Length: 71
Image (tube, rainbow, N blue to C red; front, side, top):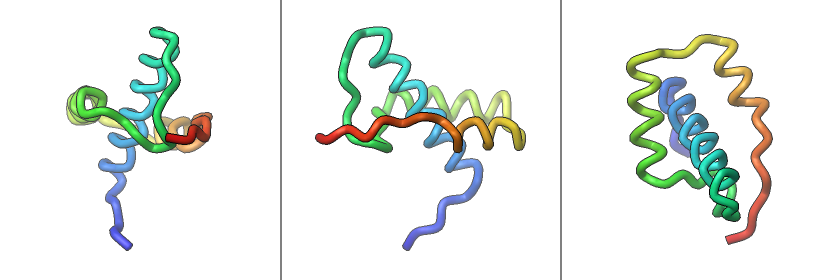
């Protein structure tokens, strides 16, 4: 099993949240759980590198509701 460092985990979860928000705004059904398109990953990476994150951000991302969606 591959271990993911904390910053990568935050980036991945933030990308997923951005993607889910996009789907909500455009009335689209999101792809499977944990999926995030490359544009969301790019934006999340910029946000994390510029703004950083703290323990509260980690908690909020961990608690985020992510619907189980079949492909």
